[in-house]
Image (cartoon, rainbow, N blue to C red):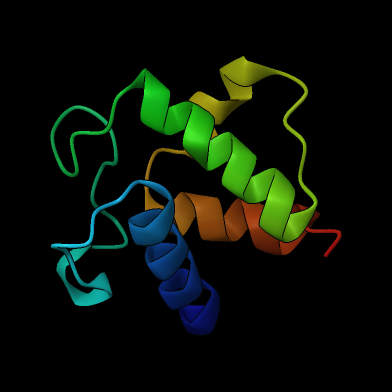
Length: 85
């Protein structure tokens, strides 16, 4: 799981052009939206694309994204349970 969390942090940094950040600076339990990383709805779309492209996960219901994208840890948990790639 640690490996997946690190991989996700790196992919998030790339997908959202957060080049000034390192994976170590992203706390796996920290909220991604609002406080924490302060992501917005455009970033959420980027994360949906990232999951589909890299892990074969298609979110049928955007509302479930709110729970999945709570933190890097919650994304890693979801990916480990649902990945097809």
